[in-house]
Structures are given as C-alpha cells and as structure tokens.
Image 1 (cartoon, rainbow, N blue to C red):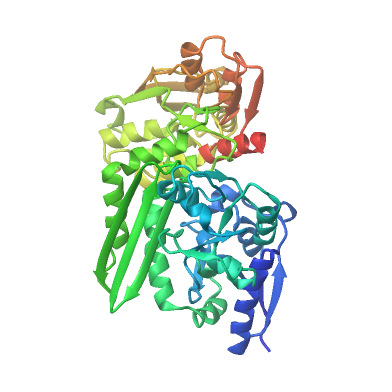
Image 2: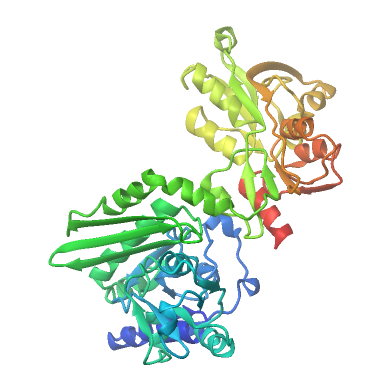
Length: 526
C-alpha cells in the first residue's frame, strides 16, 4: 500500500474545510491521505534563508516551509492569497472548481443605509474599501481583520457599524452566510477569489499525478489570466486591484480594475478573446491600465502616508524591494556612479599568471574591452559568489573566491602561484588587499578597470538605517549627510570597517549578497 499523501493546511476553520474537500476528493479517487495542520514557521528548521527560495506570502509561508522541509506532501490554499511567483521547487499542482467569486455584504439590520449619506462599512481589504468608496464616497470604512468567525462577531458587537464585506466563497463554505447577505456583483473580486489551489514539490511526480486528477481546467485558465494580470500590473504592491475572467460560448470575458486607496480614481479595462487565443490577454489588459496612469497611481499607493526609514546606497530591483519587512519603507539610489575604463591592450599580449578581481564592475570592464578568447588568465581570484558566477560565465574558471578582500588576501599569501598578481580595480581603492599583499612580498600590478564617482543624496530626517555595499558607498553617504547617525547594515567586513569610522551601530550580513543585507534589516525590524 502506498504511503498516505500528507495534506498541509493552516488550522483555521475555513482552511480546514478546504483541506478536507481535497482530502475527500483524493480518497474518492483511491488515494490514502492524512491532514497535517501546520502552526508556525518559527517552529520549523530550513537550511536556506527564505529569500533564497522566494518564500514571501504571509498566508502561505508556513506551508511552503513545511513542504520544503518534507513535513507535508501538498498544501491547500485559497488561491487569492498565494503570491503570483511560487517559491523555488514548489509548483501549482491543481486548481479545484471555483466557488462563488463575488464579494458579499453582510448587514446587521436592513439595507436602508445604502441610500444614506452617512454609513459605516467594515473591511480589511484595500480593494474592497476603494471600490466601495468609489461607489459610496461619503461612507466611512472601518478596518476589520481576523478569521471569518471573529469578523462576524466584531460586526455584531460594534454598534455604529452598518455592514461588513466578506468573500462569498469563504463565508458560505463554513455555513456562516446569513440569508439576507447580498452578493456585490458590481464589485470586481480579487484575482483568483473563490478558487482553491493545491501546491506540491516540483520533483514529486507521484503526488503531482494524483493532484492533476482534481484539476478543473476552466478554473485554471481563468485564474491564471487573473494572476498574470496581477503580476504584470502589481509586482507585489498592495494596491486595490480587481480581476475576473469567465468563459462563455468559447470566449473569455475579462474585466480588471485599479483604484486609488480612497477610491477617488479608477482605471478600468474590459476585453473579450476567443478561447485558445487568449495568451496575451492578461499582459494587454495590464499594460492598458499602466499606460493610462496606472504606474503613477501605484507609486502613489506604495509611498503614501509612509515616511522612508531605510535607504539603500545601491538601486534595488523590484524583487529585492519586495523582500523587506512590512515595517520597512525603503528607498534606493546609486550613491556611487561607475564608468568603465579603457584597458591597454599591451597588458594582454601574453598570458597573465595571477589575476585578482574584487567586483562585477571590473568584470564588465574586461569583457567590454576584450573577448573571452583575448583574456588569457591562468589563475583568477575573486571576491563574492556573484562575481565568481559572472567571471566563469564570461571569462573562465575561478581558482578561488573569498567572501571579502581581506579574506582573499589572506588566501593569496598562503597559496598564490608565484609572487606577482594583476589587480583589476577602481581608481578609488578603499580595501586592505594591496597593502596586505605587499607586506608579504607579493608585488601587485594595479590596473584601473573602472572609475568610481561619488553621487550621494541628502536623505530625509525619517531615515534611521542605511544599507552599505562598499567602502565607497559609505564615503559617498557621509559626504552628503554629514553628522547624520544611522544604523549601518553592511555587506561585509571591509564595508563595516569603513562604516565604523562614522557610525555607532554596525551590523554585518552573513553572506556578501544584497539579499543577505536585506535579511539583516528584516531581523532588526521584526
């Protein structure tokens, strides 16, 4: 007898209801199953940082970690709560037939307040709040959070509340929908609302085959379009976004919306495509909204009413920005500018015995000037895993990579072939590597591969922490913000040494990566 499929679920009433539906359907097909309610990621051990695996969702993180640790085989989620990009190694195994997609209004006494100038509606959803205020701009919205049961209780105990908004599927599935509740068919639901999703490990073929039998193709097509629209439009921003796709008469009917937080602005899109010809539908609709003011509207939402408290001295990607804790309001700018130098061809006429590269900028300078065939280096030594990957992809194998310049110098003192090396570096040399090598009778030919220029920015008074990625970023920040005391989050020991000359509180990342520095920031603000 095959081992039971372990079904991971959160332990709320709705989550357990959904997991039991999956359990029942799998057992009907002849599979043995067992429910595994999972409590908290704090109780689980993972051998890689969450950021390296792409684990981000607040409602799904616990189950993601449990699956990667081998505690469960599948996880059951409300699909609307699942991030549009799944963690590394985890895939969508199935989407069950969708339930009621609508939002539902639950009121206490009667519906007369809908025609009144003043009314109080409770919801914790920014999307529902914005759409309600767009339709009823004089009403007031109160925050409402918690599971379905606690939210219903709060509605009943708050005397001045007229109504609250719930997902029709959630409140209906656990039998708590009042008879007089109203479906808000004018309100565009959250992408994938009403759908249940199963995830599994990418390499777990047997489990994936079992789950595939539960997949509802029509629901999968529609929710995939909605989530692609969300991903393209949002990129992780907590914006008021609605999306709904339906299939009717071999056509897909889609409508999407983006609103301002107060509902005063909205951008709406609607489109119909033939089934099978809909591959670009989500991208087209998202781009339609973006080009009609959507980007500016989302930027306003991201940064409204929040003072920046963390600055990165290096421009971050959107994926990196999304890694920050919700208490962090980050901004990023390049505090140093780099221009690549012309490297004299005479240097490369013959094979160079030992080459030292401590940054990706030096790699870019080399490959911009010359082809890989022209770069005849016998031994390449570098700093950083990403620099190593770039070198090996563009130039050739790396003999040794260290986490920082000092560690590389210490390695070279003991293991270098010969007593000479060529160092492709910046015109601003702020590390200890040359001095350490020279003190140990290793002569260094320094080649300026790129020019570094300070381009610091004056930061807001609200900034209390700064991410530093090199000694030159420290110097650039200090030049533009003389006397400002901040917490210095540093990518490595060399950067930390430079920061210690100016700041009292220094924190050093475990790994020399941007993501590791962000993780350090998150630990501070957690």
